[in-house]
Structures are given as structure tokens and as C-alpha cells.
Amino acid sequence: MNIYEKLIALGIQLPKVAPPAAVYVPWVATGNLLFVSGHIAKRDGSPWVGQFGTSMKVEDGAAAARSVAIDLLGTVHEALGDLNRVKRVVKLTALVNSSDTFTDHHVVANGASALFAEVFDSAGSHARSAFGVAQIPFGACIEIELIVEF
Image (cartoon, rainbow, N blue to C red; front, side, top):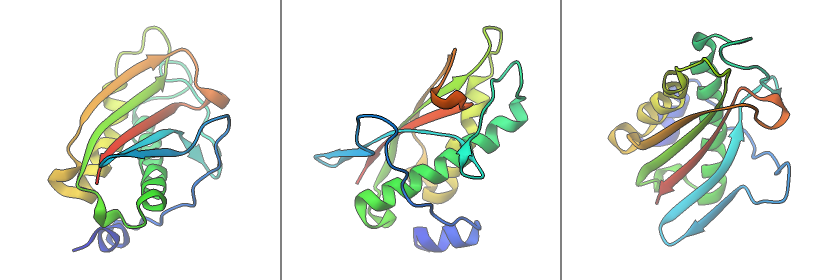
């Protein structure tokens, strides 16, 4: 099954790439690596605002991270022209908007990691870092950046 058939089976429609919100590009390809700029969580087209440990629960985190992963897939598709060119998801970095007492950043990031594993099978397994931060642009609850080998 190719990647697009998997996406259809999962009920996922790839979004169009959002224009950068500042002075940067959505991705940079060098050699056989694609570096994808951070994408924030969105709900209904607007930033998914919230902070884990205060206004958001861990249960909401997986959904927010999964939504970011879908947006990242849209960007990878635009950058490479075909998601079947992805050889491996190399590294995912998650910045989690959280209170100073919140410690489940890794659980929030699992929503994105699980989606990449569903879509790319073993090639979706990746190295990962998840950090708690005091704020993310637009008050978003999570931002994720990605490195992909193609």
C-alpha cells in the first residue's frame, strides 16, 4: 500500500502549506535530508491555543500533536512532490507550551510520533526530543519541527 492509500484509509486529507508567519522558509532540502520548519497546532484553521498543566489536559495533547503531524505531512508532500519518496522520518522535535509543573511533554508528543509510525511503518520510527516551553507563537499549545530522509 502506498502512502496516499494509507492516508485515505486513515481518513486524512493533506492540507495546503501555510505561508510562514515570519522571515523563514517552510523547509530546506540539503543532500538527502529535508528540514521542515516548526508547525504549530491548529484547530478549525486557527492556532490551537492553550497551555498544558493549566488550561489543557494531556488527553488533548495527542490530538493537538497529531494535527501538527498531518500539517507536517502536507509540507513534506509539497517539498518532495510525493510522500512515497520518504525513506525515513529521522527526528521530531516537539515544543510543548506548559506550566512549570507539567512533566508529560513526551506523552503529548506521542500523538505525532504515533501518526508517523502509522503512515510510514518502521520508517516512521524516529529520534525525538520534547521540551516544555513558557510560550509558543500565537499562544499555540504545541509546535513541532521535523527532519526527513528521502
